[in-house]
Image (cartoon, rainbow over all chains, first blue to last red; front, side, top):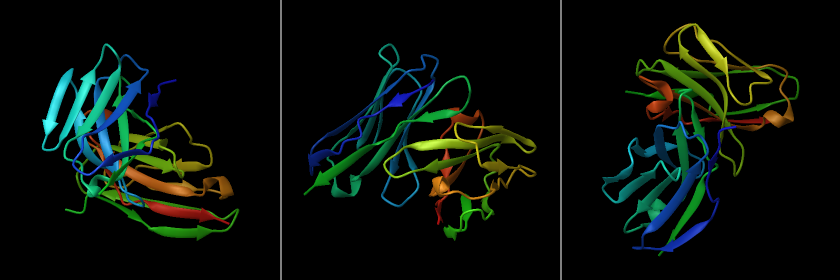
Length: 110
Length: 114
């Protein structure tokens, strides 16, 4: 059974702080990793994708991948109240079908 | 460019009724997926398709059926609706190597079975 684990939260951070969201996966064959943001009552939207070990930065967002530890993280710098949402982690291996975690709820308070 | 379009957005069904959730995409994506999302839970895959004429079961296929006669359309059929099928349903599509590419999601259909 392929699993992607996330702490459900909520993770509460003050405005301007760094939010750190974490995800672990069980399938060592996973090759592609995604972070989606989902606002309440809305559909998921892609934030970051990462395919290689290391860091990938896009604006205030940084995705980090460590395949040896089977660990993916998303850092959000200078967090804003508009970042308050649920963040879904997904991993895809040889089956070409992604496995999603349950998501971490992030609350950024002013 | 509309992306992934789902209809209807909301629907209330009575137990035992049937309905079809429509999904169409205009991005010429080969891969299409149907998910359900229950409150506080992640996305559970119902069915997926790797191209026209090809469909396969996901994690929770019981009570559902799909077809893929064209690249654009991937309808989900509920037969004999049950209260356990109350959920939010998302259709998604992706290009190239399926799950190794980001998925584009529709706005969802909120379905209540009473």
